[in-house]
Image (cartoon, rainbow, N blue to C red; front, side):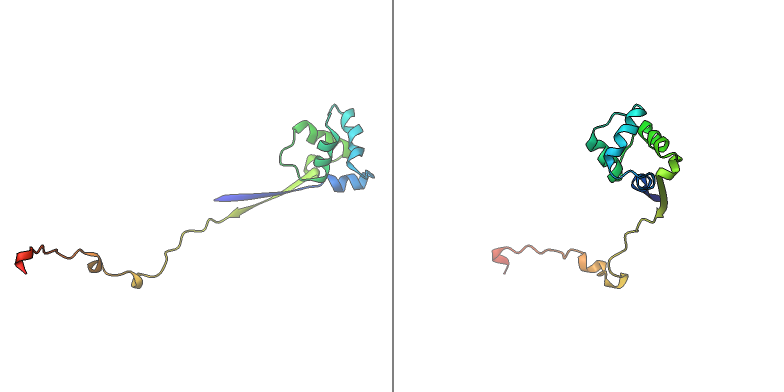
Length: 113
């Protein structure tokens, strides 16, 4: 059975709680922890849900906000049922096999008419 995983990235909420108004406020604290990212990378990290993240960056963010990692990101996983292909029509709509049997051919010569 397939599972669908969805996550929520809570960096914006944590920034608001600590009084950080924009992503530039993260540049200094990240550099203090040895993480050097460009301002555009930090903006995407703070304002968008990341597809991938380095573990060092994740731990540095948890240290900056003084929270556990599970407070930075929460997730939900749900099972997905795969739809089985359904038969089109019913058995009554299927034509009989005799309708598909070939008819014996008779070859006539022009003088046999």
